[in-house]
Image 1 (tube, one colour):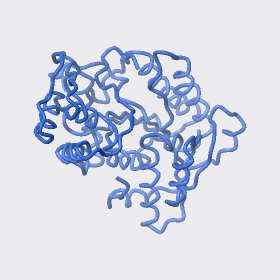
Image 2: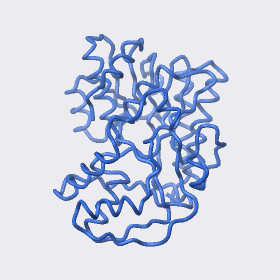
Image 3: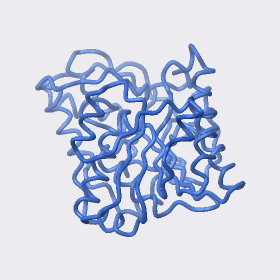
Length: 328
């Protein structure tokens, strides 16, 4: 997951300046930082990877520093702390809140919109890859194909609305200060410890029903998603560029349950019936820029099945990919 491809190393050689990652201690941040650092080290570059987070886990911070990443503990709600953050030519913005929106929507809007505006102003001279989500799109009929970048956003629920608000803050920076931005609309990155495939595999393994109302999904290996994020720094633009990031397949949830059943020696319990629409994205533009992901769907299924069967580590961070009403 943190081994850079030749293509990433080549692109990192073309990126001037340090790479600063905000929200670096989340689900994807640590591996993205290590991937970037290993790529720069392979080049013998003197540029730094700077990871910024509150670092509520000292272990995560120590692990990043042991990998050669520079770390800065920062509360992005603290004016003085934000003002003291070093400027960097390249910024990957990974800050965001999803879960708990239904119970405290004002905190979600604070973290996804208010904080974004402050950071957009501070880094107005940088090129910025902004982590966003395919949740900004409407549900699509499968016959229409997944939403591509030309589909008008129509977010369902306050979480998805606030994610579009995050995009608008960086769009404002682009229009006001000429900031170069790439809106990175991701769904869904997977790790063996969490993600859509982990959730379906674990449900099959434990004999729990798999809800198929959201009948299809997109998935991409986290390492491949991180590579695309770093390589996207070269494609930040003004006006901002929008890029969908996911795997090439629109995958049936029922089929995934059956595939895990075969590998795990279980008969999956299916709950519900597929709706005619689903939250699915078309990432053809990303694949044209960067090629297809290195890790195939079949590999991800095989690795996840083995991981679950052997009792591998799990993060209790469900994606709620089944959610159709935008309640998180």
